[in-house]
Amino acid sequence: MEEKVKLAHYKVGSLPTLFYVPDFITDSDQSLLLNNIYGAPASKWKILKNRRLQNWGGVVHEKGLLPQILPPWLTNLTQKIYEESGLFPSALNHVLINEYLPNQGIMPHQDGPAYFPVVAILSLGSPVVMDFTPHARFKQDSQDDVCKDSDGGTFEIGKDKWLDDNHPFSILLMPRSLLIFKDKAYSDYLHGIKDCAVHCYDGAVNEAEALKHKESDGNLFSSEDDELETIGKGEYKNISRKSTRISLTCRLVPKVHKNLFRF
Ligand SMILES: O=C(O)CCC(=O)C(=O)O
Ligand SMILES: [Fe+2]
Image 1 (cartoon, rainbow, N blue to C red):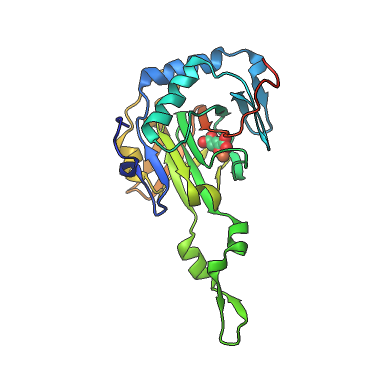
Image 2 (spheres, rainbow, N blue to C red):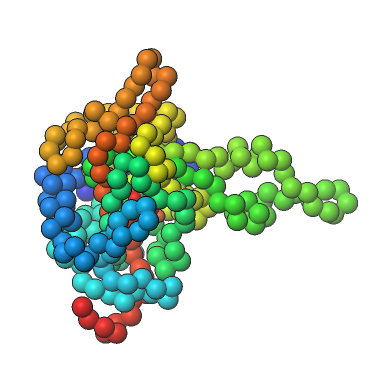
């Protein structure tokens, strides 16, 4: 994304606040990030049931951040996101790095309340499809979806109408791309990645944009081109996840507890 280029140029799908920036970083930036991530002490990895993660920037509590200085190899990235997106009120101070093997994913979830409600996710390695699903709580709470009948009672609008306005969608995340979402995409939808080795990208909101930019570097990870299969005449648009994916979820925790502890 060139400096001062309007983010609006990268809007994808029908929500106003979902942006996909192909080739946000270069191949050599990707290699540098991967070298730093895999060069971190083994103790930096937290092992979960379905993925591994590294937490950088400090410990996030519901009431704020117990901060830890981000290393320069991460501030290079967060500063670029901060400056080029223009969506954050101050510099990003937290990065979560997730590593997924081909049969691993992340359950549909909503990001926690401690974060400023804009998230920027940089993808490295194997492509994946991320699914967005309307949030059930949003469905129940939405006053707009409750209509008054002539007796003053209320009735719910039909499920079909609700789904028209709030339909699930998916997005193809190619390596070196940046996904940014906020507002409705952040608060009214869950996002997740299926834990299976084949993902279908047919109908993904950014299909054209994602497939335009797929030149590969051929090192560290197997070629991403090999992972995109188009069988027949575009009937099955699948990804075979053959290699590891790394994502860097970059966020701002506005409330920072000062001088509580140092690392
Ligand atoms: O790996 C991803 O792309 C998503 C990660 C995510 O949703 C999170 O860390 O909250
Ligand atoms: Fe998330």
